[in-house]
Image 1 (tube, rainbow, N blue to C red):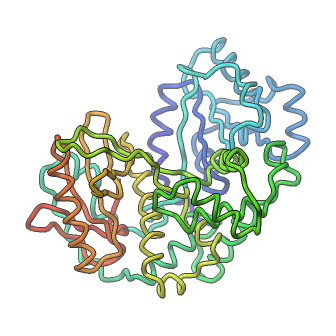
Image 2 (image 1 turned 60 degrees about the vertical axis):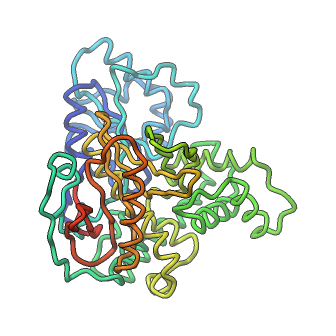
Length: 419
């Protein structure tokens, strides 16, 4: 039996079960929601077969019967369960009674008649970070960078190279792809990607009417513009050109994008809007990102060798993977990820900001002196622009050692990071 690898989100699940009657864990298929949830429950109801779904539709309340805490897997197949859980918690006071897992939002959101506030709390679960897949040394803590003025981060990191990073990008953080044979691992991820488009027998009507080839074209365009602020018009033009179409209206595009977001495949990061000293206008466009970079690689048919021969594309894809891990690490310390760009052309790839107003700035580069110096220059400009001082500034790289520069900026490889 394959050994279970601990997930960072476990701490948050445990905490939320102590303060809420039910916990909703949402995220993409095959990221490990069910396996992790099983560690916290005493009974399970899986709504993954037609018979189980039909029975639950007839008797949704009966789905809740069983020893608590109880896991209801893929609950969105029977949206009435949300209200049943809420009513049950009203009648049976107590914390940590249910975990609901879901890899998409319900077909008809109007059937969820109550937000669940005060009874049901939500957690986002993503594919595995490098720390969770045991491919990060974990020598540098994001939390410590916020908590301490100076952190000793030195690590020579000699065992990790750029080719390994390229492989990790293409393989992704899917638990089932964590196997020793590189080609088989890539095949597992390719199979996952192909499975994204099997909507014919979906219990959700809004997915059954989606054209798989149109979804593929959208994902290919998104992948070409990953880690950029490409406008919707640019992506739509891509679709028109690649599909030999006369037109592709924005309403149809929005409908397909809604489906991809509901499936937790697309996960853009918003713009950060701090108090700044200059009169520059802060840009508000989202940066295009996937929940896992392997989806972008599969969409374009990109292999590790392809990335090694195209460092510009490699750099954009690496930024996407770094954002994936940073989201998980930030969430573990109750922080959020955003990006910064203003009318003067100043950019910052990732800003972790906490509820207390503290923030840390991160420039993401493949590595090498020139790119690191470029990242340092951007960070220094950002520091002089924002009215409050950053808790830390970092250039996050793909390879090389971890160290603190004389100017106080940290240079840290992604495979040395932890929450």
